[in-house]
Amino acid sequence: MVNKIGKDILDKPYITLWSDKYSITEVQSYIQQSQISIAANLQKGDYVSLKGLCMGKSINIILENCLVEKLPPPEESKKKKRIN
Picture 1 (spheres, one colour):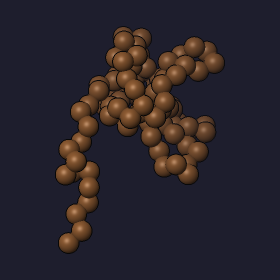
Picture 2 (cartoon, helix red, strand yellow; picture 1 turned 120 degrees about the vertical axis):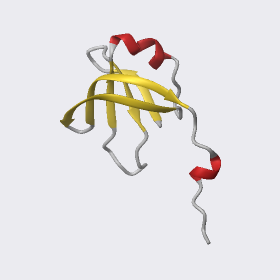
Picture 3 (cartoon, one colour; picture 1 turned 45 degrees about the vertical axis):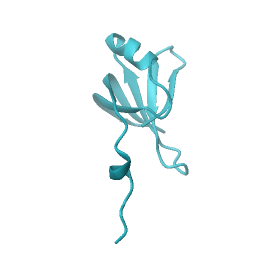
Picture 4 (tube, helix red, strand yellow; picture 1 turned 90 degrees about the vertical axis):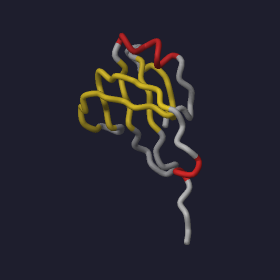
């Protein structure tokens, strides 16, 4: 799930994915130039599939050269765990 959409200090567009609210580490995904228009239409909370090259971790886990696919939100029945 998309947490942030922005640009770094070198003006490279990226998307970060939602992580636990107590975590300081996020997955920061740098977008391919051909995917900029898709990324520009995303909002916080959208579901996405990202494919890219993992470059390791500094503070964040870094993915480079990412392809972006917007996904529909999961069905409510699948999101909730049933307690029996």
